[in-house]
Image (tube, rainbow, N blue to C red; front, side, top):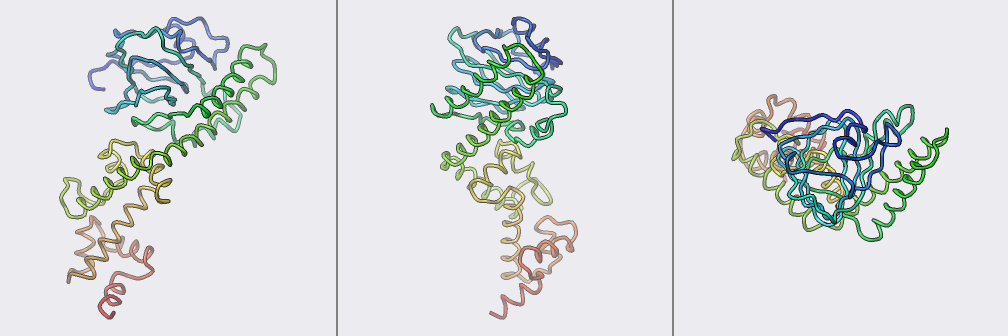
Length: 306
């Protein structure tokens, strides 16, 4: 997003002003009809940072949203999530007259002194900087809409001492359903997931052959960037598909390559450790024994004697 001006939106009231909306009914939470939000192509050169959470479902939006160098997938009815402090831009083509949906804006202070203030950070989809929104089936969207209707009803009711906790309870239900549906999405997109797994295997093969400019051990961040995914998203996808996260995949591939070298070459343990990207052979030997219950030399002897 180089060259874009960064605009920080510090409050929900400020967001309402910027988008031509009436003043929010509560300073720390707002539920907006997406059709009422005004976007302009004049703002395409602006990157935005919110000091609050945004959860939304948007339809018929003639635009795309961008995190870093990646674009969110804007097809029919995606749901997506933005956390405080994330930088993004919205590149609008037209202010589509048929756009619809909703946006829930939630300031962290609304959650103060509640378990969700801490627990909301466990929902990894707030950290996704990838083109992978949450796509809902009709049944799933009906469930989400029901929860949003409950929040809307409470939001527009007279505020009393129970209102905050009731709204927070509904938000927690919304987040838990979203987590379930994201998990379903990983499982139902198996072809795409296996393509990512194949690409990851190829990247690791090339790295351990020394065919990449990246030196040392491959990092989760490096692999995720090469796959155009965020580290959290890649690990979640792999965990659902294979039962292992990205770091575990790196270790599995590393041990596989180490076994090949120990069995088929006369290289010393130190030389193998260096070729695989370790700075210290002791670190390599410790990891190898943790994963195989044998030291590298014990493994070599067991192969040679078999």
